[in-house]
Structure formats: structure tokens, C-alpha cells
Amino acid sequence: MADHRTILAVDDEESILLSLQRILELSGDFEVLTARSADEAWQIINKQLPDLILLDIAMPEMDGIEFCKMIRNNELTRNLPVIFLTAKSERMIEGFKAGGDDFILKPFNFDEVMVKIEAIFRRMRNIRELASQLRGNLSEYSIDDLLQMCHDKSITGSIVIYNQGETATINVEKGELKDVKYKDLSEARALDAIRLWDEGMFVIRPVDFRFKPELMKKKISTVVRPEFNESIQIAEQVWWTGHRDMENRVQVNTYLRKFERDEHRINLLVDAGPKEYFEQIKPKVENLTGTLKNLQILVLTNPEADWNQNWQKFQNFNDRLVFVTSRGHLKRFIPFGINVRHVKLIDSLKHNTLKLVTNHRLQFLFTPFCPEPGSFMMYDPQTRILFSGMMFGSNLEAGQYNRLFALESDWDAIRQYHQDWFATGKCLRYAIALVQKLEPKPIMIAPQFGLVWRETVINLFFKRLQYLNTGLDLQINRLPYDEVLKIIQAGNQLLNETAKLIPASRIESKIQNDALLMATCVFKDNQIVKVVGLPQICLSRLTSTLIQGEDVQTIRQIQLFSRGVARAHKVEGYLERPPEQFTEEGLFGEE
Image (cartoon, rainbow, N blue to C red; front, side, top):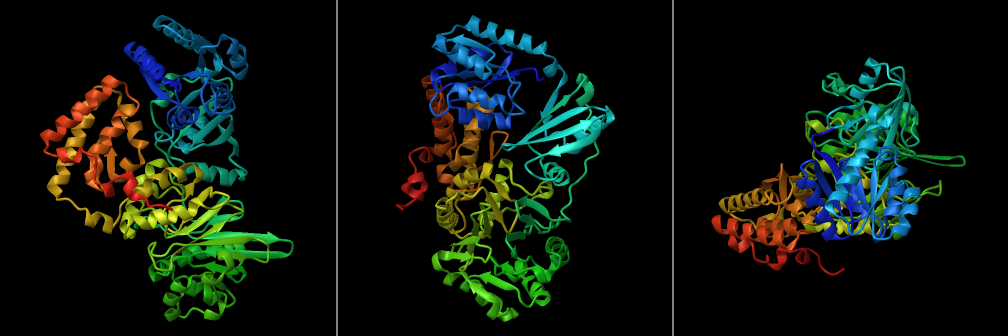
């Protein structure tokens, strides 16, 4: 346990949150996280597991009783102590039945709050399960580290892993792997999938074993690097069949989708990959289809020869292969010898929908100039996967090559990709608007390049991409480098001054939750590293973000800091309301 125990306070009344935060942080024993709703609290828990939760009962949308039940039903959070806050003593029985550990009646005083919390921690220290279990973060210990530790100590019990809203369980017996449970995957595929997780939390729950504090001090050095030399199942009847090239920032994905009904079988491949990777992609596809002659449909979302020329090789192996693409893309394929008699143009489809003999339907979304004139995406309503082609990709760095799925921390790789490839942010907003109209909503986005998006990150990345400026946007509104540097320096000084008033963790949370700010600046350790959007909005937006949710006195102090640093760096003009084209209202027109 860290020197300071972490308490999460959840209440829809800002004044109560501020009171609790001051009371507890002044004691010097606690770090306090705050949330104004159950949804916001759950997002915090996904990132950082607190030691105790103070939970208001009467909240809008999901009340404290229901949220407590949700906590108790989750493998990772079921043992977290919960103290309810309520003005109605008659709800105490209901709260205890939901799994609450204690109550504090409103209005409360300092002594009562401290006594109740310390009593809870004393009780929890005497609970055998808490005393024997060990928890930590996957950013520090890999899945293989944990298995090695269990093997070394001959542990019998379970490892519960939680990442981006998903839970997996590994059971071990006398240090040996017994079984793995994750979704409906087989044990082998489940273990392969969770080995890719490098963020999230874990809890080791041994049977008849008590961990010693020093057990985790020495990190296991042996880490098995996952390889991508086999297909990876990403959904029912859908597999990733691409290739990872450790020397290339642009990583290529191809996907195989199987359709079945009665005696009908269709194997559909989304994109073919570049010819340099054919020998890596071919065996993955053959392993799933038996032979390339059993591949019936190849969807080509990208006309660039550098990234999709394997269609020629697939055509050579299977002269009955049907190609599905747009009219704009076809013009680029014809000079290379595509069999036009076997091409199905999505431009001629009724309602942009392709019906297969298996009775499945595929929906196509035209996204012209995103970034090619004939660009499009393909939506599979049954699996709820959007095969987005060149949209929603990412540039990868060395540490990201061993993962298939995107995490929130991968935002910078996604931002860089779209700023490299797209002429204007209007392209992104147009494509996102099309996706948001789909029913049912996609739960996975599978691009041709980079990382696959799960449902847990789709809305987050969409919000940020809607504010992202690219190409021409940045050129039109460009500022001299010296002026941008002054804005960065002023912003960082404001952040340093604000850190004297509110905890660094709260500043980080404010920044991460502001989509426009994240689309405009790159932050590291609560400092602006560089400006990647329109610098004109940085200082005013940063100020409004920092004061959000604070009390009147803190707001005034931050505003004073903001005006002071702006004057010191001679950028006062950027503290006023930005011109309309730089505001949220100026980014979006009427639908």
C-alpha cells in the first residue's frame, strides 16, 4: 500500500465533495479522488483502484445503492469498502443489503468522518482475504511476470485481471496454469489475448497462502513477447490476419470474416496487404479457409499499391475471387490487371447494402477524400464491427507493436496518423457523423492500419478527433514559432501555479477529460510538450478547464494566475474569447 491511502468520494453536490476533500487531505493520510456521478466514478476506478469509497445514495441516473451493487458484482472491486453518505436514515437497511460497510448521515462533521474511515480500515486489516491478496498494475508487471511468480511460490488460487472494462481470470494450482477464462475464447486464445494487455490492474487471490510485502519488490525480468505469426480471433467468426513489421511505424491489418448458413459458406477478406507481406498473410488466411481457393470475396478499401497489392497474388491463386470496391478505387486497380468481370462496385448497390447468400448484409459508408476520392468503410451489423479502411488508424511506436487493441494512452499515435494522412479535420467530422448514425452502434472499429478500437475507447477517440485540426486547417491559421513557444511557456507556468492549489491527479483528470484540449496539445507530467492544433485557443481553453468544478476562491486565483502569466509572456490576446473559427461552435455546422 502506498504511503497515502486513496479515497474516492462520489456525490452530485460539488460543495460536499470539496468539504470531504479538504477534510481528508488536510489529515495528511489520504489522497482524495472525486466524482459527481456513478459513471464518472466507474471511469476513475477503471484507471486507479481506490482503497475506500464514500458514496452518496441520492444521485441522478444511477443512485448509490445500484452503484454499490455494481461494485460488489465485479471481480476486481467486490472487496472495496463502501461508506454511504445520506440524509435519510431510513435507507440504511437498503444500503447494507446492497453491500455497504457503514453509513455517515448528512450533515456530518470532521471527527465523525475520520472515525468511520479509520474503523473501516481497521476492520479490513483483519479480513483474511484482503491480508492475503496482492494487487498491482499491469504497466509494472506483465501477465507472464504474474504466472512466473505463482510458479515460483507454488501458489494455488486465481489471478483476476481488469483492463478497459473487461475482466479475465487465470486459475493456478500449485503454481501451474489450470485454466483461463476470458469472454468465450478457448484457453489458449484467451491467454494470448490477455498477454497483450499492458495497462489495467490485477489481483492475485491465493488459497492458504499469505503474501510477504517483499514479494513484489523484485520485478520478474523474463517477459515473453507476444508474436503475430498466427491469426488472432477478435470476434465471433472474425480474425485478424495482418502482419507486424517492427521496422515500420505503419502496421498493416487484414481481416477474415466467415459467414455461414445451412449449406452456404462464404470467406471474406478485408484488404490484402502489401506484396512484401504476402508470405506472412497467406498462411494465416489458409489456416482459416483451408486453401486460397476457398476465399470468395476480397474487399479493397485502399487503392494504394504500396498497401494493398496482394490482391494480384490472391487473384492468381483464385481466378473466381470476387472483388468489392468503389468506382474511384477501381480506376487505380485496372492498370494492374484486375479482372473487372469479377468486380462488385459498391456505388451501384441499393441503399449501399450488399446482401449475401447466407442472408447476411453488409453496409457501406462512402467517405470521399478520407483520404482518397473513392474511400469507404464497411459495417457488419451482425458482429457490430466497422471495417474502417484508411479511417481511424494509428502510427505505432516500438512499445505498441506487441498489442492489437488500442488503449486510451494510444491517443497520440492516433492523432499523429490522422494529421499525417488527412487534408482537413472536416473529413474526420464527416466520417464520424456517418458512423454515429449506424444502428446498432459499432462495438469495434477495425482499421487497415495500426490498432483496433474496442467499444470502451470509441466515444473517447471520436470526441477528440472531432476537434482535431489537420493539414490545411493548420496551415491557414499558422502562428510564428516564437509566438507558439510563448503560449506553451505561459500554459506551463499556469499549470505549475495551479498545482499549488489543487492536486496533480485532479489537474491530469481535467486535462484528459477535455477533448478539445487533448486534440490541441500534447501533455506529459501535466506540462504542455507541444501544440498540435490551433495554438490560438490553448491558453483560454486551459484556463477554463482548470477552473471547472472548483470553488469561487480557487477559480479567482487560477484566473489571476492566467492573466499574470499571459502578461508576463505577452500573449494576453489569446486569453480573450477566441475568434469564432477557433471555438467549438465554429467547428461544427448545422446538420
